[in-house]
Length: 437
Image 1: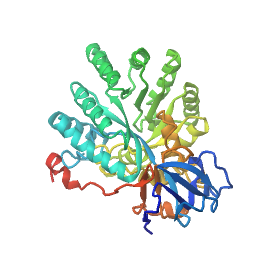
Image 2 (image 1 turned 45 degrees about the vertical axis):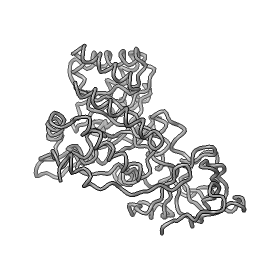
Image 3 (image 1 turned 60 degrees about the vertical axis):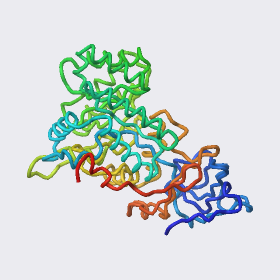
Image 4 (image 1 turned 90 degrees about the vertical axis):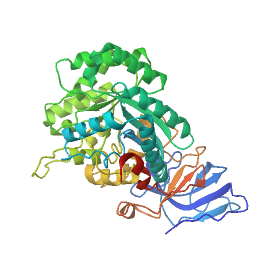
């Protein structure tokens, strides 16, 4: 089924009638729900949602598009990506799919090719893809070893301005924590991040200096008004407990900014009592957790000639049950850390439901790519269907969960401020000039 808009006499006012909405993403409209789905008419006036009403109650004078029970979602938030790495696979692939292989392939590629023009070309391609899929907010981590941090943050600032009316962008400086020992480098990095309105991040690893490194990081973040977003325990080693150390450091330093942690894979490898204590500490410290199910299934537990024994994901349900804000995201796209992907939150959601068992029931599942990540990123105005909000919506022919989750929803229609956008995806050939054919 393909929706097509016929321009009514007053094209700025129309109704999406007989729509099916994920209740968790709807504000101020609470009819009885069946497996988290509600029926509604959405009234749109001059690009703004002016009413969400029971079916049949919309003004009769408004032009109507009958969705025939098709789903309508708010535009998506993709809260953990790597736009600077995207699409380098044809140029530097991961020879064995391992984490170490990914690190080395990216290092080689970064040192050889990451000019401003190269990063901009690939970042633009990624943003065009995300926009076509229906994304309105993205946070990206940027590799921030010197001098790359200055190049990538300059490109990011330029792209944020260019894309501000389509996708809101946030950026996090990504670097190994041990590099903070170089005081001049770290001071310059913090200054760049502060100047560009970014976040401070880092990769945490178990080492004797971890507590001291975290104290330095949180003091710098507090002194400069920066939030924190860290890569944490991306390993199957059960002895990796930097998540616990981060929560303790937040409490020890009285850090009042927002702290997000990604991956947290080793938590699922620990014994129940150890994991339970860490989950409680994470909740006490007010951390938010993002799981990257596709990338972590690709990388974790990969050994030559051996079938993987686990899924590579964190204790998502246990964290959520403890009151920890949780979400899922794309992570890497066609680079050595993940050979696939297209920054499509529908794909991320579909795979997350399967990998994390977010189903049976599915009542709250839609939150993981809509309301939850938008809230974590400090944008509670996004990721929901609400009166007074922009009509930034994604329309699907699927009417119920079994239909939605069984196909890639390639026939979706994306509205931005009530207008249908061109969903044509960029051709990979456009990247041949930078990454090769």
